[in-house]
Amino acid sequence: MTKPSPYNDKQYKAAKRRLHGQPCVDCGNIADTVDHIRPIDTFPPGTPLNVVNAPDNLQPMCIRCNSRRGAQYRNRKHARKSWRNKTYTPKRLPTPSQ
Ligand SMILES: [Zn+2]
Image (cartoon, rainbow, N blue to C red; front, side, top):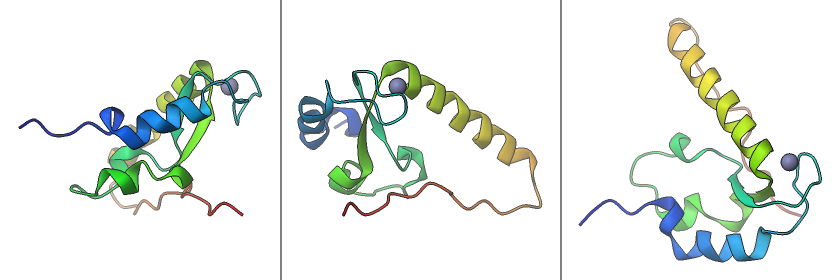
């Protein structure tokens, strides 16, 4: 068995159907992607997909904002590796929906 992909999960696919076409949380354009508020790779290995893909952790985002955000995240992560004496605390955790 291959490792299940968070993007192949039925909860994620349901979120795509629900969130695509809504306004992007960043720029307000029509969203055509679903963004993980807390990045997938910040979850400990073995975290169930229904936690990673919890509705509270997903938001509508357009492809431009999503790729920009992904690039920023990867840059930060890369930078973090060189800050050998600093501990990293994720700043953007999912905020509970009201
Ligand atoms: Zn956008």
